[in-house]
Length: 217
Image 1 (cartoon, rainbow, N blue to C red):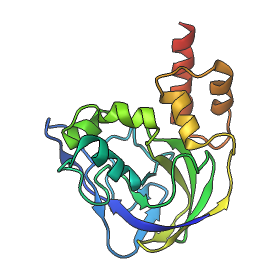
Image 2 (tube, rainbow, N blue to C red; image 1 turned 180 degrees about the vertical axis):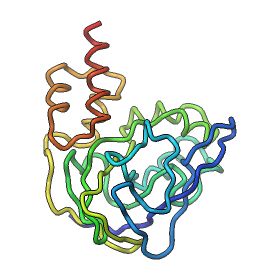
Image 3 (tube, rainbow, N blue to C red; image 1 turned 90 degrees about the vertical axis):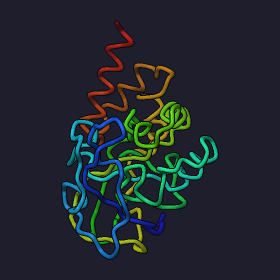
């Protein structure tokens, strides 16, 4: 599996319309960028609780999600070019149903590993100034995913993102997202199985434990 990197994105934290500071408004970086264990060197992660590194050093969002959002919610003036949804990596031709927890990719010369799906939050709606987006993203499992960086390196737009090792093939990002964050409660045994995968993030394990506790309460 190989796809071309459409853009690598980064940005500094900026105020949202409600005054909260966020790093969701990123932009494509020209040329090669340095990728460290903390993510793209030029990027600022304001909320390190929900988007912290190193377990969630890089966020990848399929760029097809932009057209999907515009189809369902109209022009969305604040949804600009690459990086407008807070993603660090933009590609075409790869979806949440085609990648798996633990997949390892060459990102330029860096080696990265998928750790968990992204959990959309209210910051997206504050940024785009449109209600209902998060609920729709959750229902469609259009969330993107996070990587940890196993080997630092460099990459840029036009480079390849190449699969070098398949992870846990029963656990696509879409399935992991829906069972942990979706509206329907996943069976305990499946949540427990997901939590025990050796390559998932500590954050996802904590979220699974909370869901299990809520189900038993």
